[in-house]
Length: 347
Image (cartoon, rainbow, N blue to C red; front, top):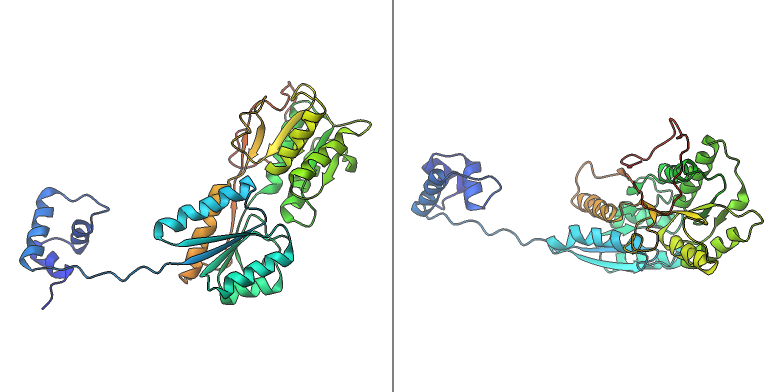
């Protein structure tokens, strides 16, 4: 008869869990006397642990709009942090905000047998992509909703985050606040615009469509959109930029115009970067939980691949955090009372 763990536990006079802790090294500490009894019993019974089945190596596809964008790069890093320690492989592709290219990437990854997909959609998720996510390869939507129904997704509260940024600028004494935003077809941009407009309304400030520049999430739009705001007959005294890449373009435009931040114009950005605290002055930003977003997407995907009963149609909304630095004017003003505040913020 081949000895089992149960036989060892009976011989040593300990629980089965204690035998497991001793022979498998953890997670609970076992006293020296019990450990000696377990080891002696295993030796007397010639206990041989069963060879565990080799772990299945998964290949996971990730499709994002631009892998060179710092936000998506950190999100992909979060995905890898979860998958690589288990030996799983990650294949990443950039859609370039092109729905056709996005569809081809998804089809190509599925044909090559990926176990699952993480997708940040360009716009609304196509019917074909939704079908793949429900019937062919499990799919998790990351950062943007994309009109998804029935698919696991992880996003952040873009509305409250934008409201908080504009509220901060209002509290800092500004009454003409510009917005450099992404395209209306993307839900994250729409929610940030909603947060901007409702913060103005709550503060009793009129909405001026001329103070809003909508366009691609790109350096070029950040540059040209800011130039357009600065060219107004009455330019804004503060600007809220709704993404890291837009903020980079915005800062370039401010430098072109030789404007000093915050003396000439105040700035609040969306998304923290390695350079944000290094510029002069350091930038006040809404910090996006990009790496945590990637980690969460990976865990949701693994749960769906494993067929966990509760793994379907989960919507996880992550919190943002306001990082106060020096790029916004800070003067004594009455605070907005009872307005939406992003949970977990520091202001």
